[in-house]
Image (cartoon, rainbow, N blue to C red; front, side, top):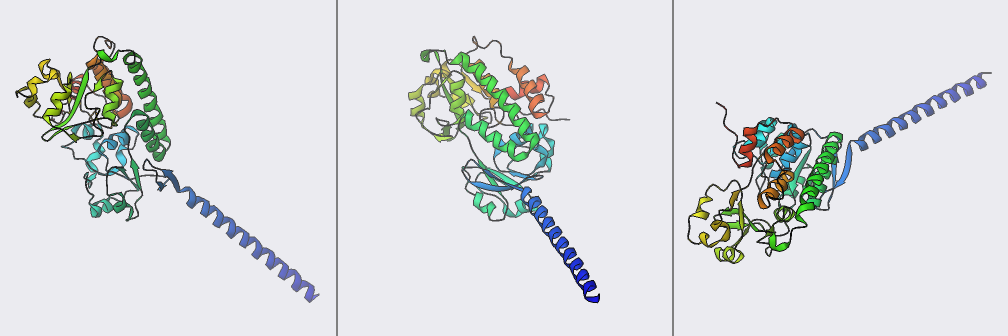
Length: 357
């Protein structure tokens, strides 16, 4: 009887221990799954697989144009480390005032690692052209490298960013891409039918001293072509390429668009050399609009740039475009900011916000 009782007791103990062990395994399995769901792997535009957090609360962004993209996708308040300053990008800081809490730790050439670490970002975005991604990765912070030179790549860049940011980012990225596609179609449906000889030669100047321009294989080349122009500098590949005055005279552009931060553009009009250029003779020297980011360079406002440039180059064919109205609508829909008509005109003129008294 005692032996039978002992066997029953031992059997009960074994059963209990087995159940506890199974329960522990189940808990380990659940914990493991939970840990796995905290991370995901994406492929960035440098072709690298990057493990990033599923839930991102703090962001470092070294790409000047991409800070605006984050704001548009609903994560502007998560930027803790940036390349910008309020003085350098006043419209961005006005539209996304949370930027004032971000620390400026990046330049185009380097990063202040100590200051970056203090901000504790979950992720850092950089352009593929910057050389310090590995320096950041060595600290354990995941780095996503991005780039684009045309509108298809732009859409992919924004889609990758939206996917990284989560549900809201995906939705807003899809909304922006639909808007961009509709405006590209509206513009190119017209400009694709314009004979080549009726398309003006357009030169986009990035700086005057030294004289640098934007050539082919750039987003600048893409919007010039979409808007019904011919890039006068198409034979040169890349952004911000230094050229001689002799080269400008050879190209003899019909229209010169200067980046908005060029403050001494009057030099173009007031020298004998420049007066030999067709664009100067016709008075076709135009400052590019400049908002939360430069419209002409790699930001979300490329969708406005193509409309502005199309009307600039072919005003008779785009009488339906009201760029002031379109700018105000864009800022409300995509940057959650109610832009006044006066503010829209300042942006289109490439001017900063009026300082509050």
